[in-house]
Length: 639
Image (cartoon, rainbow, N blue to C red):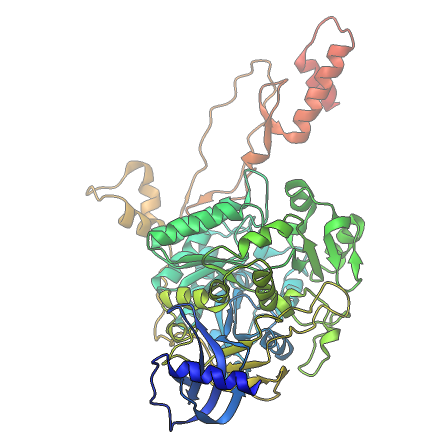
């Protein structure tokens, strides 16, 4: 091995790189590694000098430091960046460090009480940390009455709050549509989080598609845009393979909002049906200057909880066409569950972890590893054992019971890319550079000096063996949390945190990624008078049809009036009465998409009634009846 190093150094001497490091003394030096930087295309065996947490020299010269790492045969890359890590307890952070992740943030669930959240973690985190303000938590406060105080209104305690919200039998945050006042209250909570330095707004609208109206979502993205910050969302119809709720429809909603607002957008884990349409639109939008991107994880199964609406029979069986006994795996039972078991856990333990397999991903993964700006995010889950108890830093890796994506998402990408001949520089872009670039372009300054192996950049560095790096975590019980191998060294802000494949305890160099706290928020409540002033012309007088509404900006529009139905011997359902309609807020009215045209009576009815009428008509026709009277059928079915 020594001769190999000697000749590598001789070869470096002929490259013409700077020689100013000959007598330099550094905190840490990394010698003889293959230094790779996607932004500049730099790809050479070189030595790296680190001082005070920064990369200060990349050179062909021999250099010395207080600590030395021999990286012969290894790649020296910018530390991996993960934007969807939910298991950010000490155990979860340790697990991600073994997977090469130096910046671990949650852009989906987010947090409340942002200043307290950052203060609680300052100085005691092994990796860089940051968060968005969570829309779901804001809705829990307003629709479920939860106070949600303190520094830990975030993952990994999130599912505890969902259980508390459901104690009255209603997940208000998920199914309740906001009135105008409630929408303003929710937006005000989001504004306060942004004022306190949150990186943007995180939305789980995919779990609240019945409750969050399109305008409420628009208002959330609008307040983020007022601060020039991003919105990151699990979109409304992920995953769905059926019209009119197919998955790209949910992405379209958020993408169109971002484009008209000129705002940054991240779509979470778009690795399901319709991903090709979403990624095509994302690339076209970026080509026109919009800062939008998606994330994915390289596993054939997702993870959530039994109470998630997307796993309910209507979506899982109806829209996706899956069978529970073939696709829903319980890591605590270490087996698939039947539909009956699923429904039982959904009722009794809605927060219980479920692993949901998506068979088409087997082939799609080989496409995802080749998509530009498609950023890897592990979507790691809370660190629990098979009894649902939280794991501590010292807990054995074998005790983790959950999705293996919490342990090996980044190493599995490196393995897949190697096996499918994807250029390593491209894969490094998916692991770190594109995340840093998109976030930097979104205005998050600390990310402009991360995700790059260049002089003058923060020394977040991952050193790995490109030939042998691999994941070890699997879906098998006892192996869900096995750490990746082939990543022997990880540095965070210039400090060695993983040495010889061991995470060093009580070494906490992680820094906060956040915006400065502002003195004043930017929220202005929505109301009709404001809207009319901005989006209609002033004619100098009151608009007769809107006179009352202009006088009272919190008033409501009457539902449209209809003339009494004329009886043409055709049964017609009486229109449902509902409360008055607010601007910007929908009332709970029948969903037109659930109505079907009755071929017997020629009116819109619910599906079951239309089916009953048609069956009755067929029965009458086949009974040799002398005459067919649809009203007689209607009367008979009512008796």
